[in-house]
Amino acid sequence: MKKYKHIGKDFVPPDILGKVTGKARFAEDFKADGMVFARMYTSPIAHGKVVKIDTSAIDSMEGLVGVLTADDVPIVEAPNAAILTNNPVYIGDPILAVAATDEKIAEEAISKIKVDIMPLPFAVDPLDSLIEGGPDAREEGNVFSRSREGSGFRTIKWTQQQVDEFRAGKEPAGESINDWNYGDLEKSFEDAELILEEPFVTTGYAHMSMEPRTAMAYWENGTCYVYGSAQSQSFWLPGLARLLGVETKDVVLISENTGGGFGSKIGAYPIAALPG
Image (cartoon, rainbow, N blue to C red):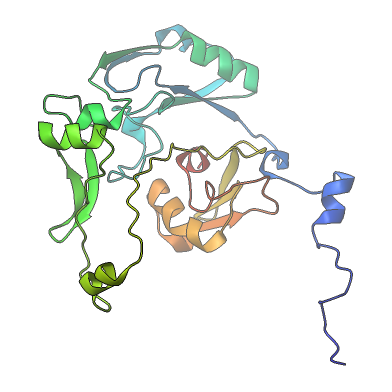
């Protein structure tokens, strides 16, 4: 009988002991001497343009270290999100951040900042955006697509016939950027005993991780050390470097344990670069 190394054997995951004893360290557990705390002001509307930011009420606030706006961070090409933005495209899009000696001061500072945002058209239902004259979710267009002409934002509007067909349950075919074939499709349909056509629509699902997104960072000898909650070290570095405006060799990511991700933490998220 063949002897297996793992099959049929008891196995203790290497991270289980630390988790059940509370000794496992997650991103929020890392601290440093002299650390300051950041809090963000996020967009209260679905789409808009920042017209004015008034921080005069916190200019002399004790414990305030500084204020960061979109003008202070590297520009990131859409559809990738920047650390902060003057053009929010969803409720909760980060607009500015403050740093303070403790979390309460940072939260108080955020509550006193006044931000004037000019509302822009937005779409909650994608179909509304596809109808002629309907609002676009972004100023660049309503669709980000990859085509033979290249990738980018485009504005696509359906004809009334396409809208009516969709509402009747017929899904329109999208444009394929790759052409390939295998076998005789028409003959396969002719020989089929049953041809079933049934459209279906799925809703969007959010990643509900038990551990929220958080990060700590510090600079040492020209290198930024980031402690974050990540699902992949290698996938993170290019995006993290892009957000920080540095080369990948100048970033070190430390992620000992991740409290859930489900795909939402495979790549670097803007909040992780904020403390850097």
